[in-house]
Structures are given as structure tokens and as C-alpha cells.
Image 1: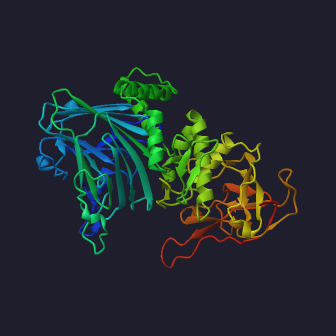
Image 2: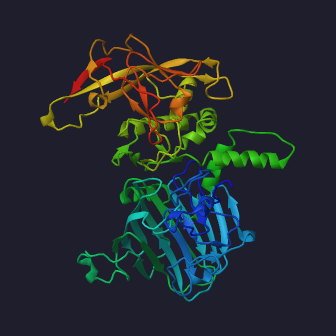
Length: 563
């Protein structure tokens, strides 16, 4: 069970437009439903029906989320319930056959048997592009289900908003509380031809306060909708055999305006074949970075399929103008790098990021920058553990971002330290006086592993010096000014052992001169000159004792003030 999806995406694309084949709930009788595990990517080959095509999917994970903004074309009488796998005609889902299914890089095709609709999908980085070829029918519809999701459960949708801008453009967003506790995704949806009518159905339970908007008929042609559980339908009237309706849905982590800007920048026209060709050209370029020779075709198929999946795990998470939603739930701008998300680090630190350093060095450098931005925005002052969509989900053990950063530094693929950034503007009001900022020069000694296991002997430790710029208020201890700002100061060197016992607990970054962890015989070390980054390992079970502790202390470094 590979937990992969067959749909359309480009390398590291923010959109993963793919079929979802059932509506299994995460919850069953108030408890975890073990059947949900098979649907981490939304798709199961054995399933006989397709519920619809949603725009976000994980690849290769062992837990899940996403499945945003499910689209389904239908004919005949309108049905807003998805129905069930054993009775697909009871809802808008459709039976299908693998004989009509085609999956290629940046392209997916299938015939929806119950409605005789040919569905074709492709994508740009931030836009999912649909092409539906309809049969002759008296009624035709497109369903937008804002309730559908992967690892779904009653109450996962915390809010949804839809605004019908005109007869061919719809914008909105939805917020969910799942693996990502506070996750918001915005969209802009454009149709190639105007819809004749539209409507919605709210599945929210009745509540005591209903406001004054209840005086309106919001189920029919009402352009401003909000609620927890919403489904929309767009009606196109009769269609002729072979008539096509195309859709473009752009996503944004920031706003509907950002989604619309992404749509206009990446998909201004309606030539589906061009988008498919461009997407496949991107894949050809990326997959050509490694060439293998083998007399057996199956070896090449296996290798390039694995390489394809390697380039779909971590995804771009910013608009075309560089804006993205940060871990602090504020909007930020990535300056000088591309922001990425979906850091399944306990899975990827061993092999995937080392591979990126070899064949995707620029992207991996951007991923390191993204992790450092995560650190800046983290209330715990931590690098990501397992993060996605502006959320730290705290899944699994260890602190695997550290070896990812170290490997990038060892290979010279870390952010440059030659340029000192300008002092940021103070976030405090003028009445608060001045804000002191410090440049902490850190000498990082990173291990190059020469053994099969992370804690075996024989380490080779090249090092580099990087500069971290932080407001003094973000450090636990006061800053002294015994050194100048002209360069890396000299001083004591403190050591943070990366012990196995620490790695099994949940660490959090603190300022302090070292750690009282008991290291293995020859551990990797993080050496900090003259200040330190130390770690405190938290209790992972009730009544367990913490394995490590850090002692706060002052830092000899340089300071300056900004208004």
C-alpha cells in the first residue's frame, strides 16, 4: 500500500489534482476507524467508484489530511449527496473502469461510466485544470463539495466561505481542524462557459442564533455563502454530445485575491493541451537529471516512478508574489527563496533530502530557508518536526530537521553567510522605545555519517559558520556586548550532544550553554561559538522523567538598536 495518488501535478506543485474513490470517515462510533488508513492519498485501486476530483493530496505518508475542494461533473437530475460505493446511482459519484483510466506525469484521464463523461486533468504549480467532455443530456451540472476531505470526520470543517463573483468566476476558502490544527486554503474557480443557474445546500445543524441573513433564499442563486458544511452546484442546462466544459481552480495559502492572481499568472487561457504539454515538459526536465541504463524496461519504470514520487512529496507553499501563510498564522513574504511545505522529516531526512542535495540543490536550499522561517515563526522556537500548510502537527519522534540542515551545510548548500541582512523594523510600537537586535554567530559542526545507524561510531565533522539574526526578546537570557559586530567573535565553545535518548523524546529549542544529556560513545555534536543552542527533551509519557535539561545563560555577542 504505497499511499500515492494517480492524478495530475507538476514537480513540487502546490496543486495535486486527483480522484478520490470513497468517503470513508476517520471516526466510527466515536473511535478511530482503521479502514481510513488505506485512504491517505484519497485513492484505492480496488474501489469501483470515483467520488470526485480534489486539489490537494499527500504522497507516501502514513497519516493524512487535505482533499480540498472536490469537483464532480454530473448529468441528469441534481444530486448533492455523494451516495455509497455499493449504490453509486444514489448520489453524484460514478462507477468507472481501469480500462478507461490513463495516468501520466501532469495528466490523468478516466471515463465516468454512470454519466458517460470523459474527465481529463492537468495542472500548473498552483492551478488545477479540468476538461470534461459531456454526452448529450437534458441537464448537466458541476458539483463543488466543500465538505469532502481526506481523513474526514464530522466537525473537521470549521468554516467555509463562497462568493459567486459573476456567472463564470467563484472565490472562497475553507478552514479545517485535522492533522493541521488550523489550516486555511483559498481558491479561485473559473469556468470556460457561463453557468445558467447555481445553488447550495447547507448541512449545518440548526443553531440558536441565525442572524438576519436567514430572510434570504440562500439555496438558489445567492452569491454570498458561509457555513461549516456546504455543497455548491453550477448548472449548465442541456449539453450536446462532445460538448466540453473546462474549469480552472487556483489555490492560495493567503487570500482569494492571491488565488486569483495565481490563476491569471499561470493559467490565463483555455488551451488544455498546452497546459498538459508544459507540465509534461517540466517532468521531462526533472526526470532527465539522472540517466540509467538497463536492458530491462521494468528497471527503468521502477526507477523513474520512484524518482517521480520523490519530486511530489515536498510542495511549494506560496503565491506567485512570494506571499505565504506562516506558522504564526500571519502572512509573510519569502524574499530570496521559494517557501515549501510538507516536511515529513522523520521519513525524509535519511534519503530524500540527501537526494535533493545532489539533484535538487537549489530547491533543498530553499527548503532549508523554509525551515528557518518556520523556526522564526514558531512559538516554541523550533525547526519543523512534521509540518504542513502553516501547521506543526507534531507527528512522530525526534528532531530530524537538524541533520537536514547539517547535510546542506556540509555540502555547501546552505544559505550564504556573506551578506549580513538589514536590521528588521521593530514590531513594537513607538511608545515602547527601542528594540535591541543581536547577530549570533554560530559555528555549526555537522556530522557526516560513516556508519549504517545514526548513533554508531566514526564521525567526520566539517564545519561552517552561519549568522542568525534575532530580536533579543526571543532569547531566554540577556545579551552582553563583549564582542564587536565586525565578524564571528571568538570565545568558549559549548557542545549539545545529539544523544539517542534525546532523539526519542520531543525536543524544544532554548537558549542555553549546553545540555546535560548523556551522549553515546562518539556522538555527533552541534558546536556553538560563542553562544549556544541547547535542547530540552520533554516528557513523552505521564510520570516519565525528562532525559535532558538546559541551563539558561547570557551570550557574549554584539547588539544594536533599531527604532
